[in-house]
Image 1: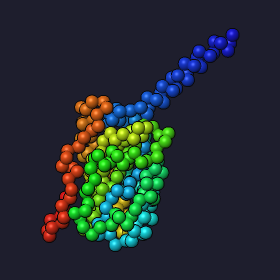
Image 2: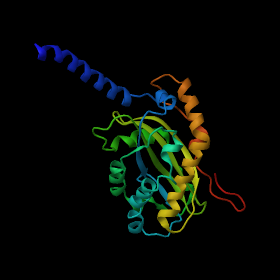
Image 3: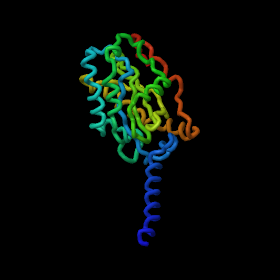
Length: 243
């Protein structure tokens, strides 16, 4: 009889625990911005679709630098403050494996170009299709990935799509192209600094805009950004930098 009495209590406890787990990860974009306790999984920087303009390093040299860039962003979390930029109450969960795999398989030779006009070809539709290739089996909640669009040595900057996705469905919830200035010695430090600048822009400016958009949008609607943000950059002119 003692076993019979305890069983309903045990079942209720298991139900409540399961419900709490589901609630913590089954979040909409609106809930993500409304509740800083909502977890965020950081996937890394995806270079597989980018164009790299004016870079002296060989394709072989470049291919060995993607993983170190992703590593330094994670290990130097105080500088590359993903958690703070996205106003999370707890540290982000790092899962770079899926993005590192995509970077490893990328054709770096096709990335190199001498022309600034070759940069900025990606669209939000391209991003939505591309994230489907990530191996996110078993992952739930909301994930963040920076998908590089173009890296210009002439303009000393890189443009990337800051992208939030539903890890279970690989659906893009929000994506916007943001440009960050480059700085530093060596390939890794020079281009990693662009992510640092983009995170600063998100923290000081973009996050507030995204939160407002998410708060006013229907629960399941993808948050859209102005078309101007996806415009193709112009070639640099004397005395004037391309945007």
